[in-house]
Image (cartoon, rainbow, N blue to C red; front, side):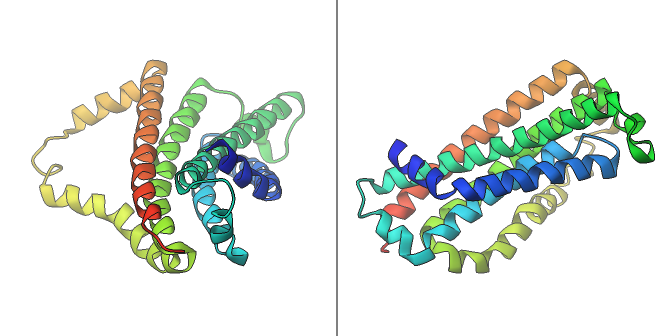
Length: 241
C-alpha cells in the first residue's frame, strides 16, 4: 500500500501544488466576499475530497497508466488502498489550506485596515469560529460521502463511463434523501418539532456541541470510506483492464 500511495502522490505532486494555490486564493476571496470565514474552510475541504477522487481516476486512463501500473510490484489491493490514502490526504490538505488562508486574513485584518470594511466584518468572533469548525466537519463528511460513492464506480467502469453516471449520482445523492424524508412523513407527524430542533441547534452552537458534531462527522468519514474501500477492492479485483 505504501508503495502505491507514494507512486500516486508522486504523480500528483505538481497537481497538488496547483490545487493548493487555487484553494488558498479561493478561500481568501470567499472569506472577503462573504465577510466571514465560516464557509471557506468547508468549501475547500469538500472540494479537495471530490477532486482527489475524480482527478486520481482521470490519470488512470492517461497513456494506459492504470494497466501499466499493475506491471509494477504493486497489487490491486495496494492500488485501491493507495488511492483512498490520496483522497484522504487531499481532503485534509484542502482543510488545512482553507484554515491557513482564513487565519492569515484574520491576522492581516487585525494589523491593517482592509478595504470595504472587511476588517470589522471578519474580526474574530467565537460564534463565527464555532460555525466554521462545524461547517468544515459537515463538508468533510459530505465530501467523503461523495468520494466514497464515486470511487468504486471509477474502479469498476473507468473514467469515461463513470462520467456519464455522475449527473444521476449527484441527483440521487442530494435529492433522494429529501424525497425519502418527505415520503416517510417524519416532518408531518411532528417527530421533529420546532422545539426539539431549536434545542438541537442550541446545543450545536456550544463548544461542546461543535466538538461532538466534529467527532461524529469524523467517525462517519472513516466508516463510509472504509466501506467504500472494501467495495472498491471487490470491484477492482474482478475488472479486466
